[in-house]
Length: 393
Image 1: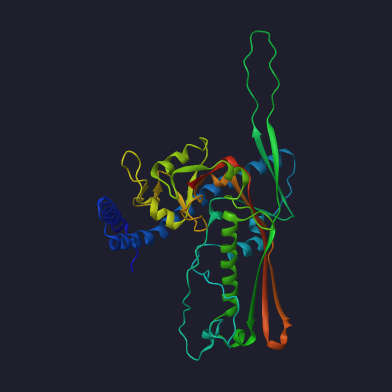
Image 2: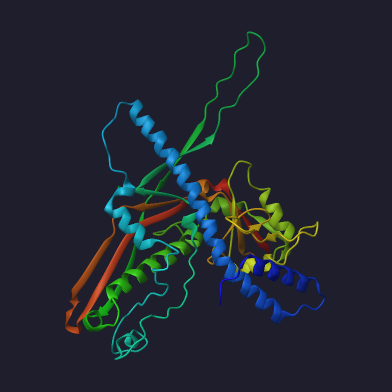
């Protein structure tokens, strides 16, 4: 099916909203229209990621320039290779890149030629030259969060808590002392591991480059695993999910309806965030489909399709990111987040990746084990920058 153009999208939006206005909407027609909009949504999400990436790159460039100027001011002129130019970073970036066509969605945990389900279908006499793979959706929180790479065990993140207080005094009176307050967060990367056994027969006689398949599947596994952890991770031996952070969870807004949300709830959530942040809505695809039906008290639909050119779809005038690890609408569910993740959530990657090819442990079975390790974590570093909408009990 051809990718829908903007005219198809606008036509589908008009028909969908017309159906919702009817007393007895045609559910089958609504489902078909939703499929058209979901196909367009993939293109829209790429635009959102590209826009957020451009913002991050601009801010990172400014930080690098500021750091260079500070080094020059201190008289340190020695040349140092930037971490982005190191082979380790490039390898990690290529392995864990999300959204590239050459990444493989489904991980094969066990590849054996004597078992069809575990991989035997790949060792038949005649085979199609393309592997048909199931889609594995990834919560791409990395695209909107602050990402740093470290070469040591941990990263110290200084945080300014409050600014000095400016006071007024009369003539010849003494002004009060006041200073900024600062805090510090320590982020420690955790090991993320994928181990994939594959027989030597598969490596030698498979119709595909199985080592490349394994690396691609591992990359997808890393991306899916970290995406879930960045949303729902406990923080114990894994990243801290922004929905699990105690401060964020304690300052949620509760919806006005039990087990669901209204258009006014989505709008009022924006008022909980301070002016000056660069916010993005984050929600699951199912919640997005529901919000497409919502209106404000003035009768305007909250979801608006983007126009031609690099303009993404908006929700209440703001961009949004589809992250399917966000909970679905249900009683007490934290289903919608709104915030500046660039300031509120920090991801750190440790340079270097470990790939071990073990031909010894299961040598009698002629099985080779590929074990891939990487180290990263994520943590809420500024809770006030992330607000969450909770469905009422």
